[in-house]
Image (cartoon, rainbow, N blue to C red; front, top):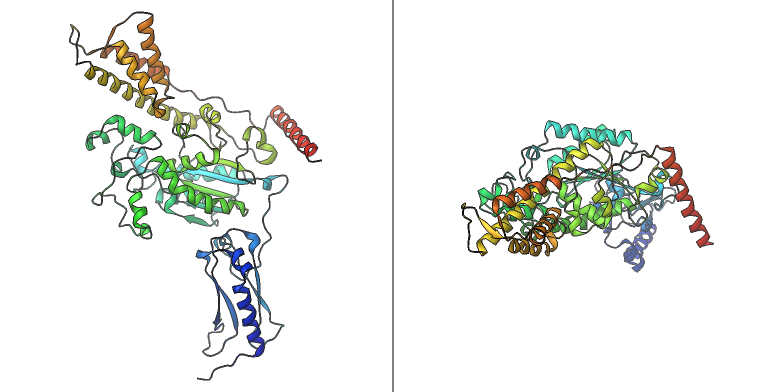
Length: 520
């Protein structure tokens, strides 16, 4: 076979390529990008080589600095300058959007000084109701379908995005079908079916270990676990459920979608606390989602309740204790507007001035007090119903804790009974048990425990009650359960209100004047 000898012009081009690829500046700017110069038969004919092609591996391009685009010029084999072509080194978002290595590099993205593009857009969405949500079962990484109601919620979320004019450039979701189906349905309904979607196991739901598949109300009986411990697993930040073994029917170690996970990652995902879920999801948010936002994409994250809670905790800097009581409703988009440093903008003052849309936003007093900056794009009635269910679950947990404290005091007192055969403890010892429980960080802000301690103290100081029976204490706890029922606060003033708009404009103009006076 005859070999074609390269001309001097081609040798010069190769020398230029070697200098570029070996330069210290090139490697410092492109970081972990991998590019190599190879001979490429562009026309498919054996022995005929038309030029040099820059080979890219988008999956290995981890850098997100768009300003690091580099231009490479190549000549054809004959050395003609008329057929010059270019190849660019792009960031991975370029390839996610369907670009090729030879597409021109866009200008670096910068936020506008005013208007819609003056803030980053992030939308969080929990998947629609799943079959096990409706059956009140621990789901975790079990791959279950959406119910008919869940499909309606997913489409309703897409309609809310469309009605509020929220455009999406890049979507992220888990590898579980309830989240994946919700993503597709929402984007289709929002008429944005073309948006690229990135899926990762790091956005999966919290793994509930051996509890997965069991009903939430009866799991402690079937597994022989203390009921208070199960409730602590559900609501605390650091407590893990029992570990899932290899013989569990829902063990994910043999699933193809998790085939690239390391053995260490598989071991860590046998059972997860909310803290473990955050440690798993946050590296992906910080390295991938945040970089997509900074490159100018308006992002949608469709995930699961505990995963979204961990993201919200990071965005709003909410404490470990306060994040436990946050409610994430199914199928209702949550809008965040973020500044250049990805810090949330307060919706009560910046909503219509920089958002340029009019979403209906509602939130809870407890969440606003702890720094929550999200805006729900949903109706108040449904959010109220969801919050009441969550409040009832929290109150049920506190009832279990109080009854267990009575049992503990009864056993320590030697199981004394009164003349009627009722279990009795000293009021002072029971009050001490409740107050000692509240010294633990996890129970320090529980309303029912605080009220129970006050009632017991009143029985001692005001009524001189020495003993209290279980029946009397249960009656007190039941009354506290009703009195501690949570109520939804009124939403902040609608953005369409002229008074609210004028007040926010005045506040914004005063801020601008103070900033300008400080600069000049």
